[in-house]
Image (cartoon, rainbow, N blue to C red; front, side):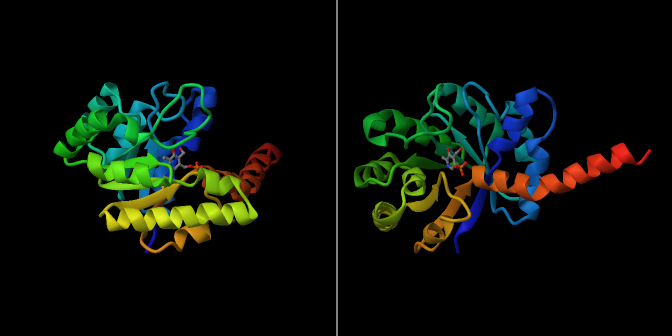
Length: 238
Ligand code: PXP
């Protein structure tokens, strides 16, 4: 059965907009687990634009499921992973100017560096995933480098429609089969929402889907009316 990893970066985005203490992603991880999340994903970016070091440390201490730490393959992040020991790490490309992770990691161009990096994480008993585009060569190199998992980038699938989307879906299905044949566990994510998730979730042997933006957007949609009602009641109850 396909499981759900909930990405809570956007909770931290709201907090960082005011640089205050709420909403606290650690509390929201608890609620995500209550809703059935099978793992909690956070991306600790070099510029710390949303998730902070403190969040990752506290999440590791408090969550009941698994912590998936998304990070760039840098010495700084390796040091943090060594201290925190997340259940697994997903290596992602990172550009300062991007709004979100734009493309997959180019594992093919960094084989030796990534082999050492992944080896260091595995020595710490941390399983490692590569966030890659659904391309045969990226999958083959992920296997060669020693990743345990891959996460297929579904951003393109999410952006397309009609026959173009169908073609991209086939590419993701074929990529999943290839990776499975090589012994890699396959996750997927990016841009998945309440309309487009079913076709990806029903791919054979799809292990886990990582979803953030659409879940947090939906939380606002179904929670705002109640929060306004509570504030209105405080104002008018004197
Ligand atoms: N997987 C990875 C590797 C990501 O970088 C992100 C975005 O942070 C997601 C999944 C979740 O994407 P979305 O927020 O579009 O659901």
